[in-house]
Length: 322
Image (cartoon, rainbow, N blue to C red):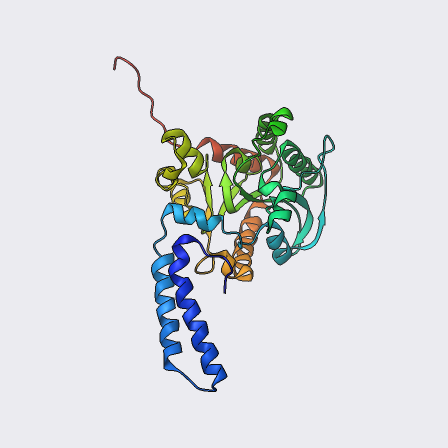
């Protein structure tokens, strides 16, 4: 059973505990019990009730689930011969961003992604998934390398945002992200960006200018975190659920708005329930997208990427006096 439960998952905790007690009793006494089957049915019904009606805020919580697969898990499950490359050749090696060459089926690939930790020590090591400027510069260095040797790029996005600390500002975090946006539009190889968990603000878009944007079913992608939005609009983070509703950040909504090109299904209850199944679904989608994009010329890839982002958003013009 999962070791961590979100608040809305708590009703399942007691039911699963009762089920385990029943199973232990039956095994210990070498008997069969119809109550076990009944309890399993009750748990299945409760799961269906909970996970089929998730609010945007609950999906944000699921996207942040500490047991979800991160970039390195997807790399292990989907790719072969991964060779990690380090450093931005300017300042240091940002551990919140990982990247390197690998092989996906019969293709050579450049993989770049944000990486979180599993416990306090690893989270400190990975800066809780908040990239510094050198992380974005490392990512862009690897993208330029991929462009030079003509291999496709896949980026995995899972970050609440770029690191907002003083040291990050001193090393020009805004410039690093802006430079990435500019340079990613000039790449002549296919770029696929996958939101696997949190897709927060400039921290996400800094490696997210892709010909295709994929999003896992229970991930989110937004210009700001719900807590940040609530702090600005309502002056109180407790309004984060209302902010999540307003931000239209869920995978289904992003697909409807044309921001995401495809939603990758997750195992029922979230990717943390079955890493292998989640990775298999993502692998199928990546294979289909790469098969199409690798047929395009460098010019077509650049033009399509540019037009894709130019079309995002809706606006209306109104002339005064008319």
